[in-house]
Length: 113
Length: 114
Image (tube, rainbow over all chains, first blue to last red; front, side, top):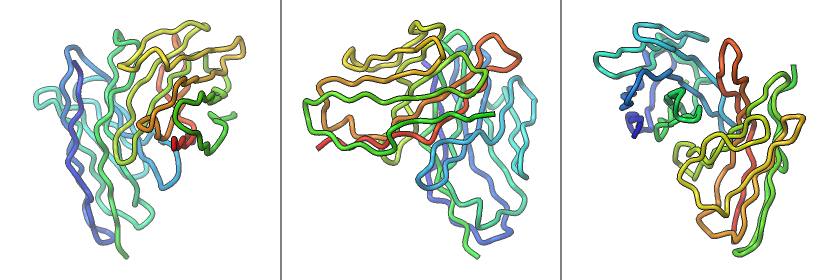
């Protein structure tokens, strides 16, 4: 079956540091890939997505590139802010799997001033 | 454009009781998916509804059931509550058949089973 593996957190960074959160996946077909963010006490917000190999998703300074050869979708940001502190979830979706999303376990990011 | 809304925000029940959670989909969306998020974990897919019928189900027992109404809103019902059912329940809406079927999530309902 499908699965998503994320690096374990928490990840603690100082403001303006470079961020990488690793995500790898296992899927039988060619999934779409997503990053969602969850702020304390809230639901999930879509951060970015990519639907095919070599696509780059980007939003609010965050980027992730769909790497089919390494089955990865690592999240990066060049300069984090305190307001980026949240839990980040990598997810995949295969269209013939009832349109369900399969999530990783989440990575907590803490950014210190 | 109205986003996904869920009610209630919080709920406390005791073991063996039944609960109904509600979700209103985003304007223009026709599909609703439900997820269970245990504390410290990623969301797990429960089921999806499209055109008032179940359109996919995850690894959850039959005591988890749902409905979708003609206005595309949805309910999640859980019977015979167990302590392990304590979690954040998330609803997501999407547009099946559109240019994109990205799922957009509501704020969730926090269920505590005592």
